[in-house]
Image 1 (cartoon, rainbow, N blue to C red):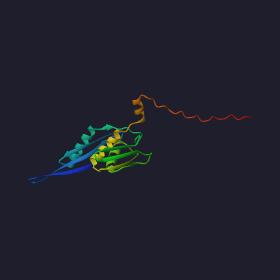
Image 2: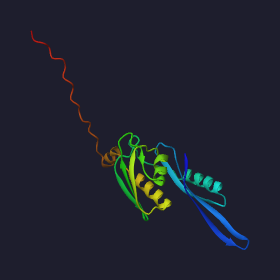
Image 3: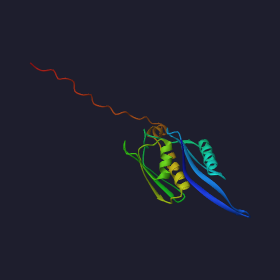
Image 4: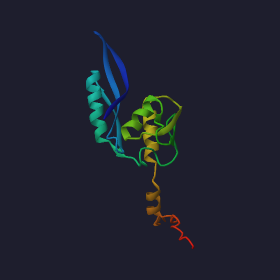
Length: 166
């Protein structure tokens, strides 16, 4: 799935007038924990988007998910952009701005709370969000890295039928 986050137009003044170039920030993902982003540049908007999508597909990375939310809270910064992501209960949805939402939807996250602090520069917000998602770790991975086993809590058995005394 391909989402265009931001399109920028830059111009160069030449003898005959202005020459325009476009750059498109594109986020792609498989909605199953893989997401990537890229900046495609071309002299036409459609070509810039197409190029950005191709580059983003080559740079996809896997993120740790817990069902359809994130395993724990994370705060991350990239440049002036700061992102706070919090897991949410089922049915909450994605509470986020359009830039963060594009990354989270592409990754397949459905329930999360987020707040974008600091800079609103789309490129840095995308990079901060992805950096935050990459820093997520599941409990199983942490235990495995430490060489420990997760103990399962025994649930008490329900009381059986008590025989009636006559």
